[in-house]
Image (cartoon, rainbow, N blue to C red; front, side, top):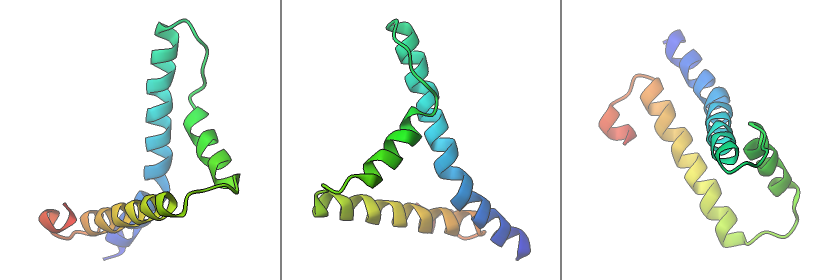
Length: 88
């Protein structure tokens, strides 16, 4: 029980960071092949800049938020030891 709670907390904290870093690594490789310069942290910076913007489409924001919540719930079910079919 304690390990599943720890796994859930680690998933909620590290999954967005690792996903952002992998996206940044992909962008870095593509920009180097094109002869441009880029940073690994660019996608994470873009997310925080978009959060600061006041002009947002409410339907799009609701879609992104609901998608994030569903991903968090599915990951918590999976890493909490639940059924993989239920998580999918």
